[in-house]
Length: 96
Image (cartoon, rainbow, N blue to C red; front, top):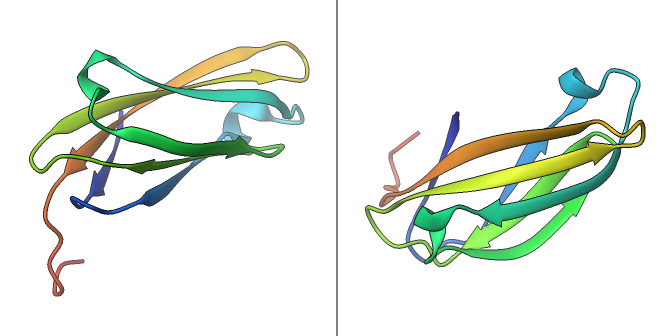
C-alpha cells in the first residue's frame, strides 16, 4: 500500500497513475472513498483522465493515519481498486 504524508492545515493533490494496469485500455470512471479510519480527512475534489486519477485532500489531523480507496472502471469494463495510507505529520523546512 502506497503512503503519502500531509501536514496539518495542508491541502494536497494526490495523483494515481493507472497506465501499467490499463495497457491500451482507458479509464471511464474513478471514485475515491474513505474507509472508516478516514472520518476527519476531507475529499475536496476528485478528477480523472484516460490514465490517471487525482484526489485533493485536506483537514488531516496531526499524528492520525487515514486510508483512502480509489475504484476505477475502464472502457472495456474492468474494475480495479487501490488503497493508500495518508500520514499527517509536521513538515519542516529542511526535510526532504
